[in-house]
Image 1 (cartoon, rainbow, N blue to C red):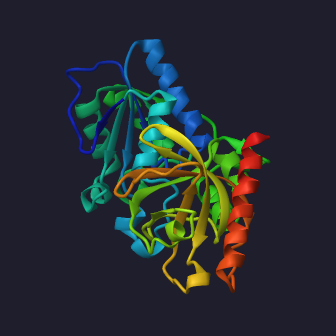
Image 2: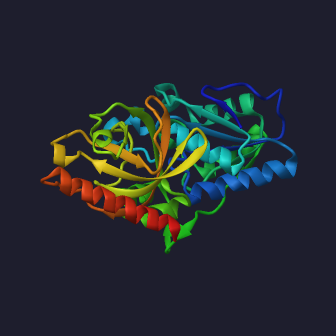
Length: 307
Protein backbone atom coordinates (compact mmCIF):
# COMPACT_ATOMS: atom_id res chain seq x y z
CA UNK A 1 0.00 0.00 0.00
CA UNK A 2 1.28 3.43 -0.96
CA UNK A 3 0.86 5.99 1.83
CA UNK A 4 0.85 9.77 1.36
CA UNK A 5 0.55 12.42 4.06
CA UNK A 6 -0.28 15.16 1.56
CA UNK A 7 -2.31 15.37 -1.64
CA UNK A 8 -0.39 13.89 -4.56
CA UNK A 9 -1.55 14.13 -8.15
CA UNK A 10 -1.76 10.53 -9.36
CA UNK A 11 -4.28 11.18 -12.13
CA UNK A 12 -1.74 10.62 -14.92
CA UNK A 13 -0.12 7.53 -13.41
CA UNK A 14 -3.28 5.71 -12.31
CA UNK A 15 -6.57 5.59 -14.18
CA UNK A 16 -9.93 4.02 -13.31
CA UNK A 17 -9.56 4.77 -9.62
CA UNK A 18 -12.12 4.12 -6.92
CA UNK A 19 -11.94 6.71 -4.14
CA UNK A 20 -13.51 6.05 -0.76
CA UNK A 21 -14.04 8.98 1.62
CA UNK A 22 -14.36 8.97 5.38
CA UNK A 23 -12.70 9.66 8.71
CA UNK A 24 -12.46 5.90 9.41
CA UNK A 25 -11.66 6.28 13.10
CA UNK A 26 -11.33 2.71 14.38
CA UNK A 27 -11.87 1.13 10.94
CA UNK A 28 -14.93 -0.68 12.37
CA UNK A 29 -17.20 -3.17 10.60
CA UNK A 30 -19.27 -0.38 9.04
CA UNK A 31 -16.13 1.20 7.60
CA UNK A 32 -14.92 -2.19 6.42
CA UNK A 33 -18.14 -2.74 4.47
CA UNK A 34 -17.63 0.53 2.57
CA UNK A 35 -13.93 -0.11 1.98
CA UNK A 36 -14.49 -3.67 0.77
CA UNK A 37 -17.04 -2.38 -1.73
CA UNK A 38 -14.49 0.14 -3.04
CA UNK A 39 -11.88 -2.62 -3.41
CA UNK A 40 -14.42 -4.80 -5.21
CA UNK A 41 -15.24 -2.00 -7.66
CA UNK A 42 -11.55 -1.27 -8.29
CA UNK A 43 -10.94 -4.92 -9.11
CA UNK A 44 -13.91 -4.95 -11.49
CA UNK A 45 -12.60 -1.99 -13.52
CA UNK A 46 -8.90 -2.80 -13.21
CA UNK A 47 -8.11 0.30 -11.18
CA UNK A 48 -6.69 1.34 -7.83
CA UNK A 49 -8.60 1.55 -4.56
CA UNK A 50 -7.81 4.82 -2.77
CA UNK A 51 -8.77 5.87 0.74
CA UNK A 52 -8.88 9.64 1.16
CA UNK A 53 -9.03 10.40 4.86
CA UNK A 54 -7.71 12.75 7.52
CA UNK A 55 -4.93 12.18 10.02
CA UNK A 56 -6.77 14.23 12.66
CA UNK A 57 -10.45 14.47 13.46
CA UNK A 58 -12.08 17.43 11.63
CA UNK A 59 -13.72 18.61 14.85
CA UNK A 60 -10.25 19.19 16.33
CA UNK A 61 -10.07 22.16 13.91
CA UNK A 62 -13.73 23.13 13.53
CA UNK A 63 -14.84 22.87 17.17
CA UNK A 64 -12.07 21.57 19.46
CA UNK A 65 -14.35 21.57 22.49
CA UNK A 66 -16.57 18.98 20.75
CA UNK A 67 -13.80 16.82 19.31
CA UNK A 68 -14.14 13.17 20.40
CA UNK A 69 -11.22 11.15 21.65
CA UNK A 70 -9.80 9.11 18.78
CA UNK A 71 -10.22 5.34 18.71
CA UNK A 72 -7.22 4.58 16.56
CA UNK A 73 -3.82 6.11 15.97
CA UNK A 74 -2.64 6.80 12.44
CA UNK A 75 -0.32 3.79 12.77
CA UNK A 76 -3.30 1.60 13.63
CA UNK A 77 -5.48 3.04 10.87
CA UNK A 78 -2.75 2.48 8.30
CA UNK A 79 -2.25 -1.11 9.46
CA UNK A 80 -5.98 -1.89 9.30
CA UNK A 81 -6.45 -0.37 5.83
CA UNK A 82 -3.46 -2.23 4.45
CA UNK A 83 -4.79 -5.49 5.90
CA UNK A 84 -8.09 -4.91 4.06
CA UNK A 85 -6.24 -4.60 0.75
CA UNK A 86 -6.34 -0.86 -0.05
CA UNK A 87 -3.86 0.17 -2.76
CA UNK A 88 -3.30 3.82 -1.86
CA UNK A 89 -3.87 5.76 1.35
CA UNK A 90 -3.94 9.54 1.44
CA UNK A 91 -4.00 10.41 5.15
CA UNK A 92 -4.09 14.20 5.04
CA UNK A 93 -4.00 16.68 7.94
CA UNK A 94 -7.39 18.38 8.20
CA UNK A 95 -6.84 22.13 8.21
CA UNK A 96 -8.97 25.25 8.18
CA UNK A 97 -8.53 25.27 4.40
CA UNK A 98 -10.37 21.96 4.20
CA UNK A 99 -13.03 23.26 6.60
CA UNK A 100 -13.66 26.24 4.30
CA UNK A 101 -13.65 24.45 0.93
CA UNK A 102 -17.03 24.18 -0.79
CA UNK A 103 -18.35 20.66 -1.52
CA UNK A 104 -18.08 21.37 -5.27
CA UNK A 105 -14.46 22.48 -5.02
CA UNK A 106 -13.67 19.44 -2.87
CA UNK A 107 -15.00 17.15 -5.59
CA UNK A 108 -13.02 19.11 -8.19
CA UNK A 109 -9.88 18.58 -6.07
CA UNK A 110 -10.55 14.83 -6.07
CA UNK A 111 -11.23 14.79 -9.81
CA UNK A 112 -8.07 16.72 -10.69
CA UNK A 113 -5.73 14.73 -8.44
CA UNK A 114 -7.21 11.25 -8.13
CA UNK A 115 -9.18 10.76 -11.36
CA UNK A 116 -12.01 8.77 -9.74
CA UNK A 117 -14.34 6.58 -11.79
CA UNK A 118 -16.25 5.85 -8.57
CA UNK A 119 -16.51 7.72 -5.30
CA UNK A 120 -17.73 5.58 -2.43
CA UNK A 121 -19.09 7.04 0.81
CA UNK A 122 -21.16 5.83 3.73
CA UNK A 123 -24.79 6.96 4.05
CA UNK A 124 -23.91 9.47 6.80
CA UNK A 125 -20.77 10.91 5.22
CA UNK A 126 -20.45 14.68 4.90
CA UNK A 127 -17.71 16.78 3.32
CA UNK A 128 -16.91 20.37 2.43
CA UNK A 129 -17.88 23.59 4.16
CA UNK A 130 -20.10 22.98 7.21
CA UNK A 131 -20.60 19.40 6.03
CA UNK A 132 -22.85 20.61 3.22
CA UNK A 133 -21.60 17.82 0.95
CA UNK A 134 -23.91 14.84 1.47
CA UNK A 135 -24.40 11.49 -0.28
CA UNK A 136 -27.28 13.05 -2.23
CA UNK A 137 -25.06 15.98 -3.26
CA UNK A 138 -22.49 13.40 -4.43
CA UNK A 139 -25.12 11.69 -6.57
CA UNK A 140 -26.31 15.04 -8.00
CA UNK A 141 -22.78 16.11 -8.97
CA UNK A 142 -21.55 12.76 -10.28
CA UNK A 143 -22.24 13.38 -13.97
CA UNK A 144 -20.69 16.87 -13.85
CA UNK A 145 -17.40 15.51 -12.54
CA UNK A 146 -17.45 12.26 -14.48
CA UNK A 147 -17.70 9.66 -11.71
CA UNK A 148 -20.29 7.22 -10.38
CA UNK A 149 -21.48 7.70 -6.79
CA UNK A 150 -21.69 4.51 -4.72
CA UNK A 151 -23.34 4.67 -1.31
CA UNK A 152 -23.50 1.28 0.45
CA UNK A 153 -26.15 0.84 3.12
CA UNK A 154 -25.20 1.25 6.76
CA UNK A 155 -24.03 -1.80 8.69
CA UNK A 156 -26.04 -2.91 11.73
CA UNK A 157 -25.29 -5.02 14.78
CA UNK A 158 -27.83 -5.90 17.47
CA UNK A 159 -30.38 -3.78 15.58
CA UNK A 160 -28.33 -0.59 15.86
CA UNK A 161 -26.14 1.19 13.32
CA UNK A 162 -22.42 0.56 13.75
CA UNK A 163 -20.66 3.91 14.15
CA UNK A 164 -17.45 5.29 15.62
CA UNK A 165 -19.55 7.04 18.29
CA UNK A 166 -21.05 3.71 19.32
CA UNK A 167 -17.60 2.14 19.51
CA UNK A 168 -16.32 5.05 21.65
CA UNK A 169 -19.21 4.67 24.08
CA UNK A 170 -18.63 0.92 24.36
CA UNK A 171 -14.93 1.40 25.14
CA UNK A 172 -15.50 4.22 27.61
CA UNK A 173 -18.27 2.25 29.36
CA UNK A 174 -16.03 -0.79 29.79
CA UNK A 175 -17.94 -2.91 27.27
CA UNK A 176 -14.75 -4.20 25.66
CA UNK A 177 -16.29 -7.34 24.15
CA UNK A 178 -19.01 -5.26 22.44
CA UNK A 179 -16.42 -2.73 21.23
CA UNK A 180 -14.29 -5.49 19.72
CA UNK A 181 -17.36 -7.01 18.10
CA UNK A 182 -18.26 -3.65 16.51
CA UNK A 183 -14.68 -3.07 15.41
CA UNK A 184 -14.29 -6.57 13.98
CA UNK A 185 -10.85 -6.65 15.61
CA UNK A 186 -9.44 -5.97 19.08
CA UNK A 187 -9.38 -2.38 20.28
CA UNK A 188 -5.77 -1.27 19.84
CA UNK A 189 -3.55 1.52 21.05
CA UNK A 190 -0.05 2.30 19.81
CA UNK A 191 2.76 4.21 21.42
CA UNK A 192 6.45 4.47 22.12
CA UNK A 193 7.91 2.55 25.04
CA UNK A 194 9.18 5.07 27.57
CA UNK A 195 11.27 4.82 30.70
CA UNK A 196 9.18 4.48 33.85
CA UNK A 197 10.15 4.02 37.47
CA UNK A 198 11.56 0.52 36.69
CA UNK A 199 9.59 -0.91 39.61
CA UNK A 200 8.33 -3.83 37.53
CA UNK A 201 11.89 -4.80 36.68
CA UNK A 202 12.91 -4.50 40.33
CA UNK A 203 10.00 -6.76 41.30
CA UNK A 204 10.96 -9.36 38.69
CA UNK A 205 7.96 -8.54 36.45
CA UNK A 206 9.28 -6.04 33.88
CA UNK A 207 6.73 -3.84 32.16
CA UNK A 208 6.80 -1.65 29.07
CA UNK A 209 5.42 1.82 29.81
CA UNK A 210 3.40 3.45 27.03
CA UNK A 211 2.18 7.01 27.46
CA UNK A 212 -0.94 7.78 25.45
CA UNK A 213 -1.93 11.30 24.41
CA UNK A 214 -5.16 12.69 25.82
CA UNK A 215 -6.43 12.81 22.23
CA UNK A 216 -6.82 9.04 22.26
CA UNK A 217 -9.35 6.83 23.97
CA UNK A 218 -8.37 4.37 26.68
CA UNK A 219 -10.55 1.73 28.33
CA UNK A 220 -11.47 2.19 32.00
CA UNK A 221 -8.77 1.61 34.61
CA UNK A 222 -8.05 -2.04 35.19
CA UNK A 223 -5.98 -5.06 34.23
CA UNK A 224 -6.44 -6.56 30.76
CA UNK A 225 -5.42 -9.60 28.76
CA UNK A 226 -3.68 -8.28 25.64
CA UNK A 227 -1.49 -9.15 22.74
CA UNK A 228 1.41 -6.90 21.79
CA UNK A 229 2.74 -6.33 18.29
CA UNK A 230 6.42 -5.41 18.10
CA UNK A 231 8.43 -5.33 14.86
CA UNK A 232 5.83 -7.46 13.09
CA UNK A 233 5.73 -10.16 15.77
CA UNK A 234 2.86 -10.73 18.20
CA UNK A 235 3.30 -11.59 21.88
CA UNK A 236 0.94 -12.35 24.76
CA UNK A 237 0.73 -9.98 27.70
CA UNK A 238 -1.02 -8.43 30.69
CA UNK A 239 -1.67 -4.69 30.64
CA UNK A 240 -2.55 -2.30 33.45
CA UNK A 241 -4.43 0.87 32.55
CA UNK A 242 -4.52 3.52 35.24
CA UNK A 243 -2.46 5.62 37.60
CA UNK A 244 -0.79 2.88 39.70
CA UNK A 245 -2.38 3.72 43.06
CA UNK A 246 -0.08 1.38 45.00
CA UNK A 247 2.83 3.74 44.32
CA UNK A 248 0.74 6.95 44.41
CA UNK A 249 1.36 7.72 40.73
CA UNK A 250 -1.33 10.01 39.34
CA UNK A 251 -0.52 10.19 35.62
CA UNK A 252 -2.70 7.81 33.60
CA UNK A 253 -0.68 5.33 31.55
CA UNK A 254 -0.56 1.83 30.13
CA UNK A 255 1.96 -0.65 31.52
CA UNK A 256 2.23 -4.01 29.80
CA UNK A 257 4.05 -7.12 30.94
CA UNK A 258 4.96 -9.04 27.79
CA UNK A 259 4.99 -12.70 28.81
CA UNK A 260 8.22 -14.68 28.52
CA UNK A 261 9.99 -11.66 27.02
CA UNK A 262 13.13 -9.94 28.25
CA UNK A 263 14.42 -7.57 25.56
CA UNK A 264 15.30 -3.88 25.81
CA UNK A 265 12.61 -2.14 23.76
CA UNK A 266 12.86 1.44 25.02
CA UNK A 267 12.06 3.81 22.17
CA UNK A 268 10.28 1.13 20.15
CA UNK A 269 6.69 1.64 18.98
CA UNK A 270 4.39 -1.16 20.05
CA UNK A 271 0.72 -1.89 19.48
CA UNK A 272 -1.35 -3.20 22.39
CA UNK A 273 -4.49 -5.15 21.46
CA UNK A 274 -7.08 -5.40 24.26
CA UNK A 275 -8.84 -8.78 24.42
CA UNK A 276 -10.51 -9.08 27.83
CA UNK A 277 -10.66 -7.34 31.19
CA UNK A 278 -9.26 -9.41 34.05
CA UNK A 279 -10.08 -7.16 37.00
CA UNK A 280 -10.40 -3.59 38.23
CA UNK A 281 -7.34 -1.64 39.31
CA UNK A 282 -6.83 -1.68 43.07
CA UNK A 283 -4.45 -0.35 45.69
CA UNK A 284 -2.27 -2.91 47.47
CA UNK A 285 -0.89 -2.29 50.93
CA UNK A 286 2.27 -4.38 50.62
CA UNK A 287 4.71 -5.38 47.88
CA UNK A 288 4.05 -9.06 48.65
CA UNK A 289 0.33 -8.57 48.12
CA UNK A 290 0.98 -6.80 44.82
CA UNK A 291 3.40 -9.47 43.62
CA UNK A 292 0.97 -12.24 44.49
CA UNK A 293 -1.78 -10.55 42.46
CA UNK A 294 0.55 -9.91 39.49
CA UNK A 295 1.55 -13.59 39.42
CA UNK A 296 -2.13 -14.54 39.54
CA UNK A 297 -2.88 -12.16 36.65
CA UNK A 298 -0.11 -13.77 34.59
CA UNK A 299 -1.42 -17.26 35.44
CA UNK A 300 -4.96 -16.33 34.38
CA UNK A 301 -3.66 -14.76 31.17
CA UNK A 302 -1.66 -17.85 30.21
CA UNK A 303 -4.72 -20.02 30.87
CA UNK A 304 -6.78 -17.72 28.61
CA UNK A 305 -4.39 -18.25 25.69
CA UNK A 306 -4.23 -22.02 26.24
CA UNK A 307 -8.01 -22.35 25.87
